[in-house]
Structures are given as structure tokens and as C-alpha cells.
Image (tube, rainbow, N blue to C red):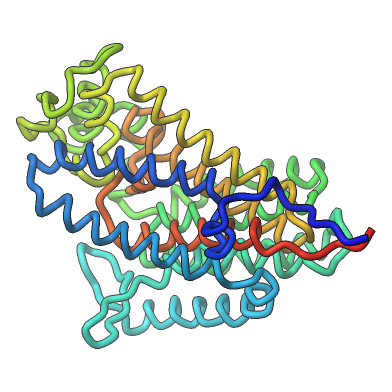
Length: 371
């Protein structure tokens, strides 16, 4: 007897387009809140909203296209995708375009391309591919090679320098490794090794501006008009929102331009000021719903590759949200990580939607199981 192990049947159109309706609804809610907040953060400039709407259209289009690709094809293509991404990162270090003190882009005619964005998806996919046919939990030698797979792109991106993206890439690879069932004893050893690594990074690996960000995180008031200005104004904005907020379009910190980067990295401060604690709880509840749906897809995935990839992509979203909100709230250093589907931007949005397309592909392309 043949049965499908799928969830209850969704609408016919969603099945044909390989869309997971609960996940799609959560993403549309986040995108809608993002446009509403961006209209206020952008000084009620409709052009900013329309540009972001166009980018959202491209992002959802990419998600739809990726959702049509069967996970078996993603599995076959992963090594090529990862190899091309690594080659592009090396090319960036050799011939990359320099902007704002960093060498992060490749010039491809009329297009400027940031290869590090590719690796946010390629790295967890490659770790999942590596463990796909191996017995789990992995042996020590397998853990070593998996760590190499994500440490190499981590180092190349950190060299650009782009520490925020490097940390996201490293966390995505490490998450896939944890989902593979790495023994907790090895996790403990890794933590012990992490301490001297941090000391060496502080002494020899970090740039001066990165050290200043960490010092500012520990004591923002030590330089209130310089390095600490961003985080101080952000905390003022969030705190002044109170429980109910000042109301949409009524935020003073953003409209009077006290809050820098208000439509990109610090958009949560604008949201918190205008919608208050209740609005922030609602926003976090939607993120929680999307993350829960992603974990549900991972748990119900039908093979190791799908399970590891879906789990690591979902936890990557959690890391994005945690780092951004922690950054603007003053509990983490400022590292320039956007808030998914709310911050104004293009390349990171396309990468994010590619990940959601993979989740939808894993959920909707399910194998026929003989029972």
C-alpha cells in the first residue's frame, strides 16, 4: 500500500507551486509589517517603500523558483555551489571592489555581486551533504572535516573584513554539525578551545573599529557622542515606546533623526518606539511561528540531507533575529546584521528567501513511501 507522509492537503494552487502555506503566511505578515515600519522610518518617503516592495517581489520570486527544485537536485548541485562560492571569495580577496574600507564585492559588468551572501546557504548545505550518507553521530575525523568546510569560508569572509557575515556563516555550519548529533563531549572541548581563540582574535585578528565596537558594547556611555551614539539612541527609542508605543508615524527618535541607520540595521528600534512592548511581542510571536514551522519541516524531513539543511537554515533565521534585536537593545555588539524581512536591503533579502524556498521544497517534494 502506498501512502504519503505529507501534512494534510493544502490548497491545490499551493501544491502545484510547491508552497508551504503556513510558512508563506508568516513571511507575508513579516513583509507587511516591514513595509509599514519602513514608511515611517524612511520619513514617509513612498519611493523607499516602493523600492523595498520591488526587492520583496524579487525575493519572493526567487523563493518560488527555488521551491520548484527537488531536494535531490539540490543535493547533487551542492558541491558545485559550494566550490563556486569558495572560488568567488578567493577572487574577492584578489580583485574585489573596495567600498567603505572593505573588500567584499565582485564587479560583473553592470552587476556588483557579494559572494559571501551565497555562502550563508552553501555552507549549511555542504555540511548537510557531507553527512548525508554517513552513519550518525559522526566520528571525530568526520567532525574535523565538517569544521574545515565552514571555517575556510568563515576565514575568507572575516578577512574582507565582514565579521557579521562571517559569524552568520560559521553559525550556520556549526548548527548543521549540531543537528548531525555531535557528542556533547566534543562540544565541551570546542568551548574550551574557544576561549584562547577569542584572546588571539582580540590581539591579532580584529581591526581597530571592531575592537571599538566591543568596548562600546561593554560601556556605551564611555563615548556617548562617538562610538556609543548608535546604541544609546537605539535604547532610548525602544524604552520611550513603553507598553503601547507612541503610535505609527509618531516616533520622535527616528523622525528627528537622532536614530542612525533607522531603516536598515536599527529598524527594530523604530518599531519598538512606535508600537511599544505589545508590538514587539507580536513581532517576536510571528518570528517564533516562522521558526517553529521551519523546525517542523526539519523534524519531518525524510532523509539526513534534508533534515540537516532545513534545521540549519531555520536556526540561521533565529540567529539573524537574535543578533539584530540584541544589537539594537544593547545586549550584543553592533555587527551590522539586518532584521529579516523588516530591514531595507536587497542582497541579504534574496539570500534569506532562497533559504525559505529550500524549506518549502523540502516540505512539498516528498517521497512516496511503501508500507
